Length: 207
Image 1: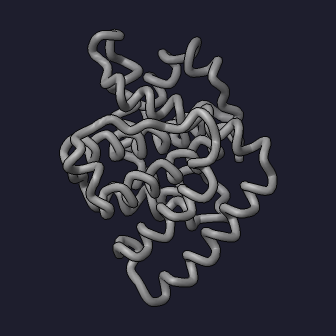
Image 2 (image 1 turned 135 degrees about the vertical axis):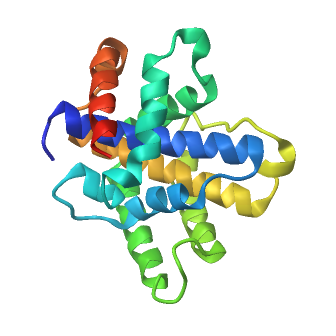
């Protein structure tokens, strides 16, 4: 992947898109299905030459670009702190995952197996979410510190929602892998927020 601010921004938007979807499901019990599908589909795009192609195209991560733009441009007390916390946690877990080649291999093989089931089920089928959620529980969920999702107990105790949340967390971590491959680092987030904001605005203008 190219180490450009454009590529980094698209990948980071993928992290924030997943984080925002998790927050919506946890607090409202639902989120836009087309946006969920774009994030989940990124888990099964293994060989791509451009970052935006991981999400199908730039439109597939447009929601994440808007969220990142809002979060990067807002004053501290105007940000959605839950979304930011989920995004930061995904990036932190990705770093631990990258140091665990056995788990990386387990996830890769698990996704390949799940991909085979797409011959029989649609990407948004409950069975697919259950399998991805199970893969998350067997792998990422064993790493510390765990991502603690805050929300309404009624929504989070629903197994279908819980599987979607886990699947989206895995999609967010996949985007974090992509972000690091594009040269992203936590220092870029801490010190380069304005650059990400400007790049977000430029990318949104393309849509």
